[in-house]
Image 1 (cartoon, one colour):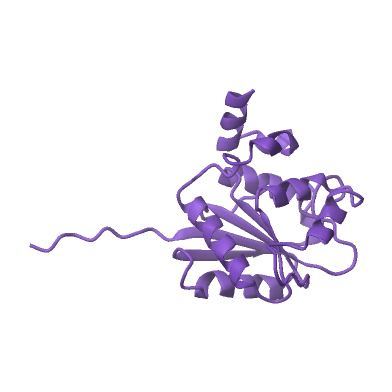
Image 2 (cartoon, rainbow, N blue to C red):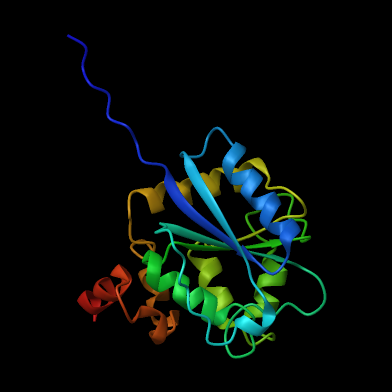
Length: 197
């Protein structure tokens, strides 16, 4: 008798950006890379006037959120003046911390992210949350497409989201850097943090 095959549910990924081009390019990367787990990608184009007080009410459940931003002009991602602070907070809560920030038009030939750029944002740029996200491997920067090293990292992040792993499990040193308001709600990271305290 034939043994029944178990179908694997594709990973639900939501990609958000202010720019439609970044949305379509990221959707293509996630959908067409054979090494990645099977993904069903949804996209949401954000509008600047919706970002403050943003509520993530998407009709489909998802395991991971990717926010893509084109690196041009002054980059304001997180914290008090960041475009995506409320978006990231909602995404973090909904996915238990399975978020990724991708900056395009930031060539990074031999690393996961442009360290000088991210340190500038985290330090002098007043965006310490961007620094925290980079420390737990949740920031990638590239020009127009990921490098093989970045593809590997992206595949690992997708795999972790598919297993519902705790993104902070290996990064106890940054727990105090996660904004407290991000940990409210159903995020598993909140429980993990409370066990450590």
